[in-house]
Length: 157
Image (tube, rainbow, N blue to C red; front, side, top):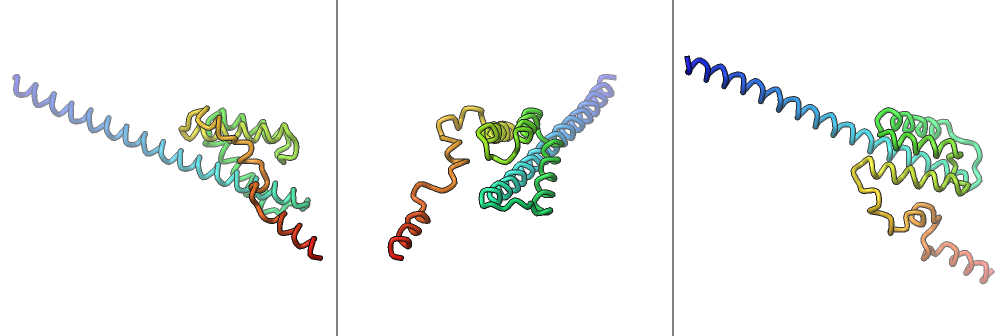
């Protein structure tokens, strides 16, 4: 009888371990796929938003259908796969205007970027001292030579 009990116990343990290993692997795979999907959606949104903002700053008022479609696609994917804090920050940015033309829009965009970083596993305050606003919103680096080049050409004309 003890041999039968040991055999049954071994088989039951093997089944439980196999089920648990499969469940954990499946869970890890889904988490990895979700993180990849989030990262792609965030990148696509930031790219589409940057293109539209740059176009506005250059004076182009008419939006291209493809640009708006890419932006809306990325927004929809964020709403589906992102954490609630990111979706809330996205809604706040979008309701503020979504053009980065006013201070409230810029602040909402910065909060959206911070929420995206957090959802990808970064700590909230790990970038507090990095002057995130200057990095995101300065239109050109301080050593950019375009202005100096223009000034030099104007002086020689």
